[in-house]
Structures are given as structure tokens and as C-alpha cells.
Length: 201
Length: 364
Image (cartoon, rainbow over all chains, first blue to last red):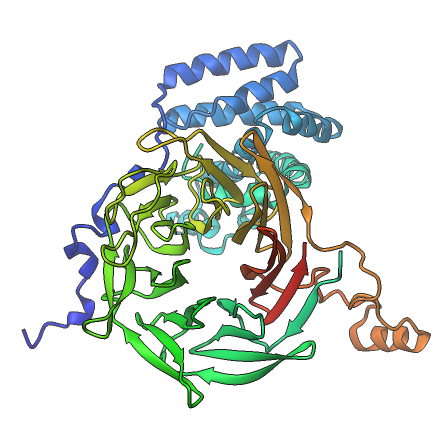
């Protein structure tokens, strides 16, 4: 006993009631599972609206049915749909659309979902960029690529490393202007909600 | 609306504060001690210091009738301080039997017991045992999954609301045989033995709960969580789903503390450094505005506007206006907001304290 360093014992692991020993998802509202096929079919319907020129309807439709219960694949499909809609809307139309969405019933919820997709999109375009640059510069030493891949995670200033990929920069500027307009309407409360929410998109 | 009365006590965060019933004594939790301030004129002067805790004091509450002060701290202890006739305060240690910090403490309206929130996923409910001359604690344990951040009593002194970092606000029974009388049936339930769970509430976002409060009648519960939501629950009857659960998603930063000023009005304050008024009923609630009167004339923001001062500012700081001050009265997060004065069952004045070391009294 004498040589056991009791300060390093993880007492939480020994306590049956401790948070380390129960399912955290039991604390959050349950989400219904959604199959990837379902997500794809809604994506199809939404694209139909988009092709018909109804950007606002498409955005609303996409944000009202976020696939919280979907798997990674399904979530990715829906993210792609939302990003496509966001890119199809002109900058001048953003604020009017957002205020109409906000004043509709359940508007704050819809805008919170949009905020989630904006953040997810920002994370995504970095990852895609890092992958792109890595692919396009195969001749680089493996060491080099690996540092490149690592930079966004370690510093957090991922835009710096993604300067090379022009496409990603454009996607980012669209997301940033949406973010600016969204915070004007939904306030910092929306950002805090996205951070606190365990229902991820 | 009269201008708020601002008292800047010191440059330290105030974790909690409490006024005595006659509003002459103010107790504030300052680091490891509790400072007692006495009102003299329109100022508060330091009169006494309660020392005994050896870690940050997290909660302080003065019982309105008996004048006893209960304090709790991160050192896992609670003390009950009684004013001795010779002057000075006599502490009595309360054994909470918890292995994590105590986070908050509140006297029951009956003043015969108090509840302490803790990081040990339980709520010690403490009452005085005459025979042993000793404060005893009984633990409410069952459904709690994480740290209790706030506790609030129902007017009947039996039901207790607790907000937790697991995202739930719970209504529990803290009935102690021999101390409490059998409570009147209420929408929360009829038979209420100790540790009965009368309700567990969660909003969609499930952010951790900062503050809970019962309405003056006790027939509604409000809680504010870190997702910038404020949720109001109207129970129907025992073992039935509530009549209404209304969640207000605000545009502002989360609220740290809330109180009901009447059955239809809630005052809440937090990270926005200002207090907000919310109004509503079972049919819906909304944010009705800030307690700050915007563009108050002649307070703080209006500075000397001479040319000399302008050039001095430009020389010193490279700019004319001093933008290091917030436009709000509080200059940092508000931690606690409490009723200060009541009239006809409604709260007419509230007091707030925060990280900036200010005590502000607001007229509603």
C-alpha cells in the first residue's frame, strides 16, 4: 500500500455513479435516426426547389430538417446541400432572407441550425483544402505534407495554410459573410447555443 | 424609473451576496472571506469580516427572520454564523459529507433548514438537530448526474429546485420528518417523501443550467442555461407531463441568475453585464428589454469635453474617446441577482453583483 501513489488513482473510474461510467447521451434529448438514403432524397427535393429558383424555400427546407440522427455520410450529404444553397444566394439577398426566416415561427431554431452549418462548413473547407494541397503537391516529401496537414489543427489559423487553394478561400468568404449577417440578426446568443448544443450536424 | 444605485465595493469578483431583511447589512462573498457591510447614508462601509473558510466562498445567504448567515465554500464546508450578544459572529461548522466543492447555498423560507449545491452530484439538505446540538445533513442523490450549480426553494419549504451542469433542472422533495409539516398538495405532487423527483426538465439544446427559480406562487419554474435560453415550466399535476414548457431563445449572451418579480415577469442577468426584463404567461414569454436606460445622461460615459482634454487623450492614448468602459452599469458579468425590496407581493427593487465588484440596486 505504501508505494501506491493515491493521488494518481482515478477515483471516478471506481465510482459506479460517476459521469465516467454512464452514457452521456442519456442526458440529451433523443434524436431519431435518419438513414443516408432519406437524407439523399430530401437533398434531391431541395435541389429541385433550388433549380426552380426558390432559394429561400430551399434554404428553409434544408434547415428545418437537419439530419441530427444521421451517420457521418448522411450529415456530409446534407452539409453539401446547405453549402450549395448558401453559395447560390447573392450577398444582397442574405439579410432579407434571414430576417424573414427569423420572424417565421420557430425562426430562432432555424437560424441556430444555419449557424451550425456555417461553422461546420468552415471546418470542412479547411479540411478539404488541406487534402487538396496535399494531393496537388505529391512531389513534396511526406514529412512536408504531414506538417501541412497538421498546421490547421495546431495553430487554429487555418486560413493561412489554405491560401493556396483559391476555391476554398471563396467558399470561406461566402460563409464569413453569411456569418456576419446571421450574427446581426440572431445575436451572439445563437453562437453560444451552437457551442452548447449536443445535437450536431 | 429611478437611476440605479451603484456601489463599487472593491476590485474583486463577488461570487454571491445577500442583504439582511432590514436592508442595512450586506454580506458579500469575497475570495475566502465574507465581508459584512453596514449601510451608512447612501454608502456601504465595511463592518465585519467572517473568516473561517480556507478556499473561495461560493455562496452566502442571510436568513430574513433569524438573521443567521449560512456560507459555503470550495473547501467543502458550510458554516452557520450567529450574531452573539457580546458582538461578533459565532460560526458553527456544518458537516456536508461531500467530496467536491460546495457551489451554492440557500435557506428554506421556513429557515429551519438549508440546501447546498455541490460538485459531488448531490444536494445536502441541512437541518438543526436539537438533541445533539448539531447541524445534520441529508443527501438528495438520485437522478443527479453532474454538478449542481444552483438551488432554489419553493415557498412551502419542502420542494427544492436544482439546476445542474447535466443540462437538467429538477424539482425534488427535501421533506425532513420532524422539521417540516406536511405540505399542501400542489401541482408538483401530493405525497412528497424525501428525495421524490417531482420533475426533470431539459430544453432542446440541453445547455448546462446556471440558475433556477420558482415563481412567487411556486406554481411555475424558470431556469436559465448556458445556451442563452430561458425556460419556463408550468406543471399540471403529479406524474403528468407539464402544462407548458416554454423556451425563449434569446439573442444575448447566457443569463447567470434570474428571479421572478411577479407571476408574469422575470428579471435575468448574466454575461451581457446588464439585467433584462422578460414578460409572459402560460401562453408565451418574450424578452421585454433591458433594465439599463440607454443613453443615461451624465453618467460615466459623459466625460469632460474640453479641447485640452481631447488633445491630452489623443496624446496619451492615440484616440479621443475612451472605449475601455462598457456602456452598462456593471463592467463585467453579473453573477447574482436578488430581490431587494418587495411591495404587495411584487418585487420592486432588485440587487445585482458581479465579477466587477459592484453592488447595484435597480428599481423596476
